[in-house]
Each structure stands twice: as structure tokens, then as C-alpha cells.
Amino acid sequence: MKISLINPPYLKRFSRQQRSPAVIKSGTLYYPYWLCFAAGVLDREGFSLQFIDAVAEKIEKQECIKKIHSFNPALIIIESSTPSISNDIIFCKLLKNKLKNAVLILTGTHPSVMYPDILINNLFIDAVAIGEYEITLQEVSNKISANKAWHNVDGLAYMANGRVVTTNERQFISNLDDLPFLSRTYKKFLNFDNYYFSLASHPMIMLITGRGCPNRCFFCVYPQTLHGRKYRFRSPENVIDELAFITKDFPEIKQIVFEDDTFTANEGRVQYICELIIRHNIKIKWFANLRVETCFKTLKLMKQAGLKHCAVGFESGSQQLLDKMQKGITLSQSESFKKNCDRLGILVHGCFMVGFPGETKETMEKTFNFAQKLNCDSAQFHPLFVYPGTDAYKWAVSNNYLLTKDFSEWLTEKGYHRCILNLPGLSSEEIMNFCEKAYRKYHLSCGYVLKKIKQSLRYPDQAKRNFISGLNYFTYIATSK
Image (cartoon, rainbow, N blue to C red; front, side, top):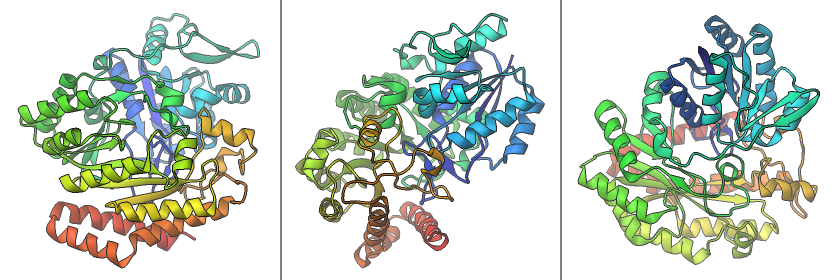
């Protein structure tokens, strides 16, 4: 049986898989890793697959539809996100008009939450796979292939007799070692050169070693829509096997990007992974998302095992706001973490957001001043993103803070992030202006530019990354209002 898995056409370099989907100023383009997990499972089952990442391959709607029509699949799987949902539904309708007999299933964070509205208003969509969807799609595919009814598979929502029907809740995958290596699926269906991450050397590979996050941040989308709060992870041995596979079979890859929500959610496991990397003499640089509670011992082992760069959610310079967003960290922890990274020579990308409950002009300035004090290698300043299914979205809706409920307006015309919150004493325009000014003031200061020049002269591998990131940002400045 033939199956098409599609990351549908949209804006140039739009990353659906990013936690805050958008076109990114640095030129970053994420791998479609969730869709690739599903492709790996279906490929292992022996199905004939067509995988199209239309964004990465720069394929327009009509050309993409033509490719799928020519393949003539029995099942079509489309991934979507909040900002792209209107575009993606239009694409689904055009596609279904051409392939009326194919079963079309929508997946992703947004459909997992908003499936009643999606299904009621778009009857050409046959079903939505809710939450973690690899095994759901595997079971649906086996049913269709055997000409059996598939609507009773766990984890689905669909229309029947004019109403939305949901099947039993899909249980989370308990043993993530059972999933095929992402890197094998990438190699079979994607072009490594199409994907870029501004915090890593190119070409790089994005991997996931754990799902679910035990922390309670009220804005984080994956734990609240796809994978749950319980932390599940691949065994250290399984992770090492994939790293060894990559270094042997893909010598062109220069860096691994671990895209787990929090790579260090289980520090004992991470320490053992690092010990295995060192023991097996796996020589490759890597990046990870960390939290500020990460202890010095773990950081030191990660550095010895190849960690070069990390991203950290410092979020705010106000302890009161950190508490309100349920971040579970303190400002002093953030300072200690950054000092430890500096001591070890680990580069830190600081993530800061504004627009939280209780935010004021004064707290925004506190956040910028705190960012300057931490003096990270790079930083981002974003408005708070509230996505359906998160506590942050419920807070914004219940207080009537949303500027618009039209999801197509959550980005600018070119796909950049837009603030969609109007808060008491803070308009969306004021929040967005602060973010833009903070980003420029941070990265275009004489001290920062001088630091980057020195870094580039001392470390040639960083010089290329700095040049590309800088070029992409200046292009953004030149082409945006």
C-alpha cells in the first residue's frame, strides 16, 4: 500500500516543528522530526512511502499536489501547526479534490487540540490523529491495507452522523527504543543540506532522545498537546548506537542537535550517555536544550563528551513572573548556571520572553538588563506565544487578552513572529517593539560585535556560523518594516 507523508507548502523556510512555528530570523529550518518518526515506523512495516517536505524542497502547492496525485496513495498524512492551519486546510481541500478515494489524516499540535472545529468545518478531512501519532498511523495503515474498518483505532477523531467522534485515548509509547533511528529515515527521504540551525555547524542532524517534560512551564506546547508531562526516554545505549551510526555512515555531518524539550531532565542518564560517548571515542560536536538546574558535574561531563553549545530558557528577569509562569527556577540559579558554562567554555544561547501574567514595561526592562548581565553568546527576545492546548492559551482567552482568534494572523505577512496579546498597560505593539529593539540592542552593541569578531578569529568553525547568522539577520532587517 502507498502512503504519502507531507510537510505541506507554506512560507519560505517556515518551521512547523519549532515550538513556536514561524519563519526564523536566523534562517534556521527544522527537520520535520515527528513526521519522520512516523515515516520510520511505516517504512519498517513495509509500506511504499512518499515523503515530501515541501517547505525544505521549495515546492509550491500545485506542484506538490501533482507529485502526490502521480504517486496515488491510499493514505495521506499531513502535519499542521497553529499559524499554518488555515493554509494547510486549503491544501488538504485541493489535494482531496484530486484524490477523493484516499484517506486524509491531519496530525500535529494544533489539530490534536482543535480537532472538533477542524472536522466540523472541513468534512474533506477524514480524521485527526490526536497527540503522539506513530502507532496510531501504523494501526490505521495496517487496517486500510487489509481492507478492514479503521475508525476504531485508538487516538483518532472523525465525523460520523454529523457529530465528532473520538476513539479511546492513545497510550504513550512506553519504550522509545522501539522507534527506528531518525537519522536512517532522514537519509532515506531528506536532504541534509536543506536544514539549517544557527546554533550549530552545518550540516547538522536533529535528534530526539526523550519525550514529555516533568516541568510545569505554562506555555510549553509539546508536553501539553503531544507527549504529556511524564518524561520518557531512550536508553543511553540506544542513543549511543545512533551516534555511532551517524559518525560512521554520515561523515559529512558536523554536529548533532538534541531537540529534546529538556535534555537533562534525568541527569544520571545524561551523565551515563556522556561516559559512553567518551568510552566509545565518538568524536562529534553536539548541542542540547538545558535547564538552569543542571549541575556542574553534568555540565563538565557533557563538555568532555562534545557539548559545544546549549539553549536555555531564562525567560524573565523578574522572579515574580518566573513564579507566575510556573517556570520552577530562580534568578540566582540562572546566574550560577551561566557562570558554570563560562568556566567550562560552553556557549549559551539565552531565551527570553515578555508578555507573561503581571508583565509591565518595568519588568520587560528587568528582563533585558538581566540578559545583558548574563552576557550569553547569543539571545532571543520573543513575545509570549500562547497555543491552543496550553495553560497560557487558556489564561489569555479567559482574560480576553487575544488580539485575534484568526490563526492566520499570528504571523506577519512574511511569516515572522507577531505578538497577539494585548495586556493591561501593554499593547501587542509595545511588546513587539520591545522585542525588536532588545534583539538589535543586544546583538549590535559595540561590545558584542567585538566579542564575535574575536571569537571568529580564534575559532574558524564559529566564524562561518557567525557570518551566516549575521548575514541572515541583516537580511531580515533590510527586508522588514
